[in-house]
Image: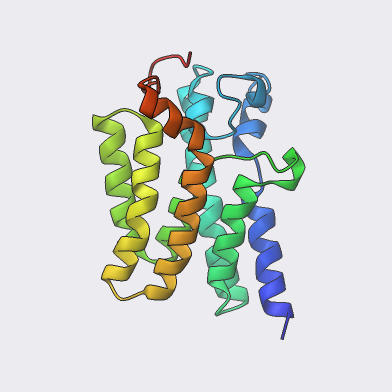
Length: 196
């Protein structure tokens, strides 16, 4: 039947495409996030507004929308969780409402990973937060965390999730292609410093 996967796709995409960074900064009077810093809609760019609370809220809500898509579809349409998780991630990266110019997917991917595989989610969180605290380069932490997710899923025998997480990780890397170029040039900013 086509209805369950189609419904899971729609639910996941709609949840994932909620641009929390844009909404929160606008409500708080911090301006249009898309015209600030890198123009990205994620928590790292929200931090550039100087509003740490807004950045933390954006991070949490972007993470929760990925997890919520999986949890809701698991309750309503058991067996379609992977579709919902993938759709939520794609919705965040390519939201219809923002002309498909969304975020880079790191927080939303973590939500999806945690909801589908707590062990892989733990590996994701430890590596992401560990690198954020030590290297203090958001792109490095995010890309490394995305890469570890399929490895962790495969390590516990969830090869179906490993394939899904690998696909999401490749999109995360693609969305970070400008960051990769800056890393190679030695010009990628660290957290707490203004972007050139």
